[in-house]
Image 1 (cartoon, rainbow, N blue to C red):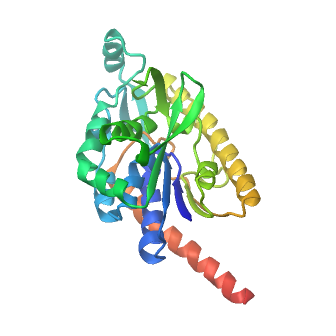
Image 2 (image 1 turned 60 degrees about the vertical axis):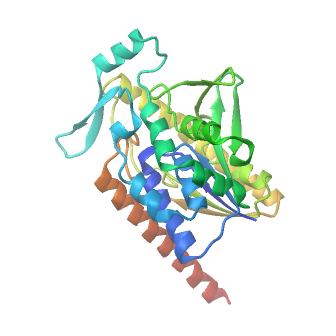
Image 3 (image 1 turned 90 degrees about the vertical axis):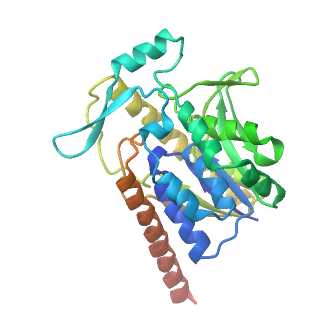
Length: 304
């Protein structure tokens, strides 16, 4: 059984889309199992349907308004041409006065998921032999949960996709089945172990970070940049732990893991969605996977 695993990574998911497109269209890999966390969960249903061009168009057209019903920050250009986020104090205050537990809300993303992933597509996928699994963090029970398309109705599964992406406290905290849920990346950023537990013997893993750190973060400028830096630090630890565990489980189950990291730092703020950049990252992912597989084939040729 072959599985495709896509990690969390916000707007960097465009790179993952490009890698997946190359593996499916050029390498002709057929996957039985798709497992995604956070932004990965937004991609895998359409990839499983082999609707790569559709998800590319949708994914690279997303902007802040597509996701946030209440956006808690403003995106500002720096004098060096980069982008940074600053607090939208009025939006945050209004959200707190409404009784929200988070700075912002992401109900627009929930609507987008239902608009682009139809009930007909859900039923087609559920009737197929492919399994699609999304990762969520159950904060009430302090555990990671994996939600398979085979176990839920259309509306419930759309909820789980949305929940998997909710990067609290910037996005919605969702109560479902009397439990509070948040982004799957808080517990399982790269769910290799789950793919192998479900029977995968070959796992292609797209990790939306560089394999080694290439930069030092700038000092935090406000509470939002402090929180994002803190979250990224914790998620980086989770990611590395997931990969170590995944490799260990693979060795003990005679499974093969193929890792695809981003070769360069794509962005220091994955909550910023820019169409031009995401189109560039999609193409970058496609070309990177192509170059990586050419190198692997050359090495195989030299050893035979």
